[in-house]
Image (cartoon, rainbow, N blue to C red; front, side, top):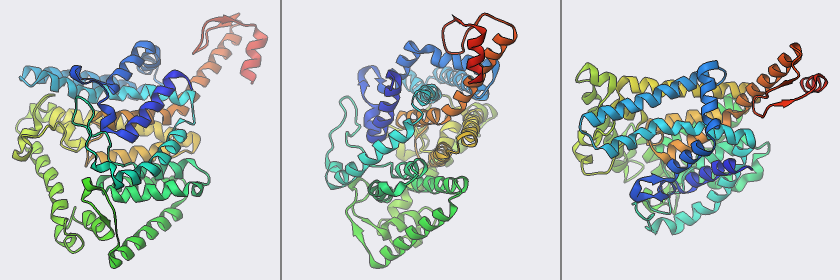
Length: 455
């Protein structure tokens, strides 16, 4: 592994296992954290890995053509929103902190670099993460969730919630020909997926499994797995089975409580028959939907606000009374984040970026047959409608890194085709040498050129 591939792997592992706590590593008084510092270092020491690809996408098209223009538009629009916020008198620091939402997609280029140097990087990360969660999950439930140590200079608890079971399950199923040899990580991953009781993750995982089953021609396995899970939940509910759970998620985990949490999203009265905490679970839904309604109503007051939003730095939390005294900048929905700060234009730009990513992932699937990238993208995007991910460093950075590694085969194929065309042109015009796409100028004979292009 070269140095920058190691950096990408380190960031993936760090954000996966420590989440928000890892994001706060850095220089807190200066508001410079590891995600910002790593991207700045990559831009400083490997500028061509970003700007050459970006410039080529803008001027010559290719696989990165569409997304390069959307990157540019997104960053310019982010700067516009910062200026709008500053002119409106909003806190400058908060306005610039919002701007990272438009900057973090540049991590796609570090992901592409890492994916080209280590095509097996995602599989390696999944296996490492799976075994980590296998041991960390039980330890977290047993006692680590009771330890409240924080990262110096922040309120981020060091021992973060043991989530990510859905990623482990999806990754092992996608990358391993014999997934059952990882039966222990699969079992613990499934248990942690249920024990964390994050409904957005449940919904995203179901979608990811459907994509894996459909495009991988394994739909019968998906139906079988879902049927078994459903049967276990029914049996567990009838037997009232309860296991130790996370203190931060309500304590003991029972199948009836899991069903109650799921049902409370759309039928609180029915959920009360399964869980005594149904009212609390339904309240977290109301907490969001009330805030979202306030954002919608604040944006449609006039045409400029509807089009361009309130601008970065605007206190969206002040739109409802119960969040005024909380340190929140995201309404726990990527749609309402874009709408509140950037208006309809911001929404269109963000989802255009996601559409361009989806096309690259689809091209990768057609080229390699690997569906992980497409399934992970769909799962992450759906979950983002109900949580905070793209607008936070611990969600956005690993997402764009993974996307970059996932689409690297398409970029590599494009570069190989360009190299072959350069060789062909050199031979056709009897040029004594040529300049490779990714290397120094060197002089070669016509026989050597012919041997290269023939091979």
